[in-house]
Amino acid sequence: MARRPAALAVVQNGFYMLKFNGAWRYDAPASIPREVIDDFFRLIGKIAAQGDRQELLEHFKSYFAEATGAAPSRSSSASWAETDLQQYMWKAAENAPMFIEAFYDGCEALRQNTSIAPPDVKIVNRILSKHKISFEIRPPNLASRGEPMETVPVVRETPSVDDEVNERIQASLSESEKLLSEGRARPAVQEVLWLLETVSTAFQGLDTGSGTVQGKYFNKIVGDLRRHSQGTTLDQVLEWVTTLHGYLSSPTGGGIRHGTHLKAGVETRPHEARLFCNLIRSYIDFLLKEHRRLKKN
Image 1: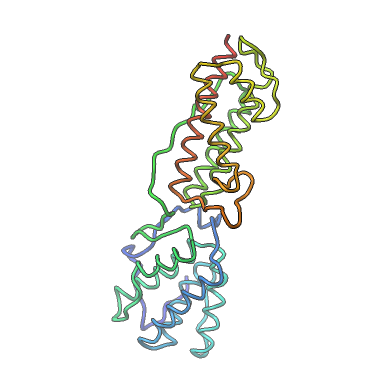
Image 2: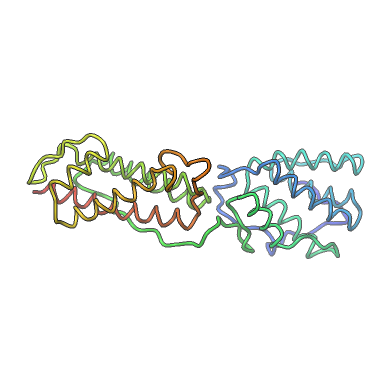
């Protein structure tokens, strides 16, 4: 750990350390763009104007250096401290949670141990929101944006498919949840949408009792299943599946599968992503159980 400047020495007692998913420290869920770094650098400049400029720059330099795993030495002047701080901020920006943690912890150390007045959480969150950074500070936690919702469970083992397929299904579901927790809405939905299309191929060649599924791709497979199960719950569910799949595929709709229209497209928000993921998870669970039922017939 870098040694804090003597005038700003603090005890890291856990009262202001930002908390978040430990895995993010090693596998960066997102980075911080240059314009966001510039906004935070300007904030540090305003903080530094409240006291000994070099000491305050050194203070933040130590936090951003630690975010990169480095141990900085004291700069020879305030000008060099500013330059060195920028270098550490650029490096720390490769990992968004670590960057945010460095700034937050540095501010809270000043707030609790000096007369310096750093910006409050609302100002920090305003910058993150303005630049569409998918994280916000909810003291003492750093969270992905959007209200948390329960995850729809999916059957863990389906006897009608082999162990390797079961493992692949669970791995994909876990990956989607990881992406949601990191605030990465679009890839989270993409992952389960891919899984839905993948699970549909399990029905290829299956005898439904009223005909065999001949299709090789999602739309054809679903079409065959609907023709062979008219008037049933499966028929109705597949109609909903088709509608959702079509919306998420459209560039002017969900914009997930075939890209988003540059002018007419809309960004998928975290709570919308959770809704889409839960709907798709429920359809996957239903289809796996239907596959097991039809295999037994």
